[in-house]
Length: 276
Image (tube, rainbow, N blue to C red; front, side, top):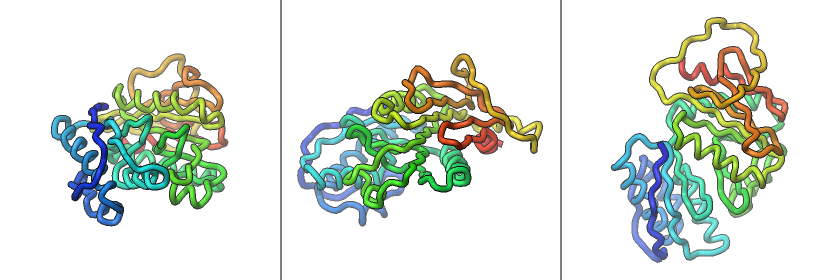
């Protein structure tokens, strides 16, 4: 479920302490550098807490980014503090905070592990920040080649980190979560002509999926469907240079894999095993 909250665009001056969200308070002692940052973080946390009190089953919260008086490097440092505390993306003065459960995180890890084996010279990362057209994104899984410069990896906003050549988002099969990922692809694709995009849609269910009836059988390349599947798990693939309407859809089945343009495969068994 995607939830939208309209933030208050008050000017940010000097303020006091920071309340806790999601058990992150211990990290803030070191992350927050001055009272201006504290004011920003407090305002964001208050709005997040208010929304979570109303809706507990949430995948994304969208907020208006508080107005920040600082400019230049100081402003970018505030952005990096926000990213270090929240799992957030900053797009067109809006803050998108993602809440990934254990299932999504497990898929992320399996995909990155597989990519590391297949693309050992690439920099394959989970949730790493990149900058596209002035906006700040965090692909669930990203593959860069070549690896960004050290200063871009350490301070990816102050020294804008480029987008990955492989951009993967993992979503649940609800309209809010899926739409957010697809809209993101449509927004960044014109500025990322060499990037290929993948959306992995998994079911939001506690019921295990059927086990592999033919374990040990060699994997074969999946073939695209004529239309987007109506039920998860399924996957969408957009080749580099194509617009969003050219996305191809695949049903995720045992002993199948997607052949990527970058030379790697996404094994569907890795995704299905999370649910068995």
